[in-house]
Length: 278
Image (cartoon, rainbow, N blue to C red; front, side, top):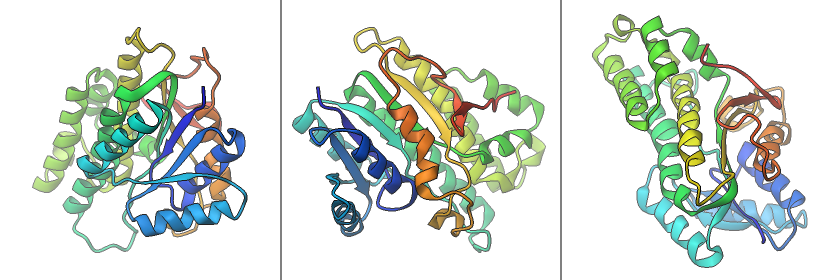
């Protein structure tokens, strides 16, 4: 059966590189979807890859809009009957010199990188087929954010076993940052992006644990990955890796062979499992 792959936030950067790599490694009868909030930018990106002889497809996707994610789900279900690969790549980071107030930065970072990514999984996971692969794009800044937490908060992250527990932790972070009492509660307000990615990495463990219980669709694995410091718009092009290099581990995990459970639910960096929750 032909595979169906979706990469969120893929009109540029690492997402674009993932689409390129998937198109090269999968046969033409497979469907690789490049997605973007802005259809104009998305279709231009598709046209750029077509010039390379590749055949990606396009669908609009805004991970903060439920109706947008639902429209993608309905399209995939109607056209293909399901989904085999989801690379949850779309995300957002404020620039270092951004003047947006810190509490607002914390709120928006978590809304997009944690709750937005979670919603994409929530809506698309019911159409994942047996042996599907989900790759949540995280960051090494998640490790740095974890290291700054007070021990009780670290323990809460280590022990979080349900989505409700994790949502409560993320919401509490946003709340105490807004109140100016973050340190009092064991949080560091300045981590923002890293904290949102820490939440996503912790969520990955829960998603993987839950989906493994579904005997009607065996073999589904969920991973989180740091692509490394990549020269993209998000890093102001300061990274030492190219987007194609940053995509390597993401695509490698997305194409792990059927039956391979190695590292499912774990956080990867440069092709290896890296322990965050120590």
